[in-house]
Image 1: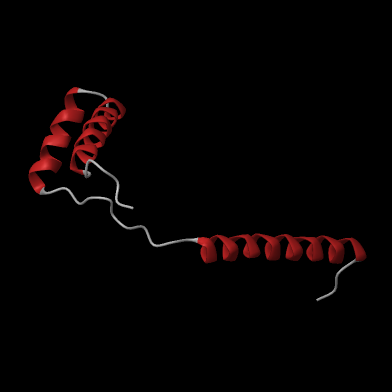
Image 2 (image 1 turned 180 degrees about the vertical axis):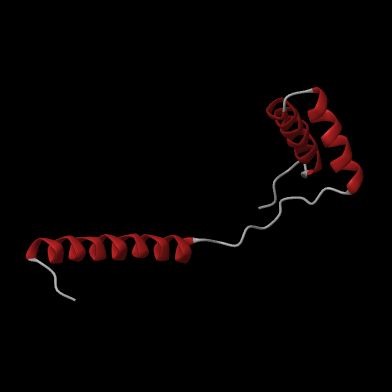
Length: 83
C-alpha cells in the first residue's frame, strides 16, 4: 500500500485517536462496578406501578415513591445509632 506523506499523517492521527478512545473505554470498564439491585419489586408492586404511571407522570410517581420509601426506611432504623 502506497501512501503520500499527508495520507500517512492522517492515518497516523486516526490510529492515535482510536487508541485514545480505546484507552478511555478500558478505563471506564476497569472503573465500573456490578450494579446490585436496590430492591426487586414483586409482581403486585410492578403492576401497581404500571397503573400509577398510566394516571400520573413517571417522574412524579418516582418522586412520591422515593419520599415514602425514605420515611419507611427511616422508621426501620434503630432509635440510637450503634457505636
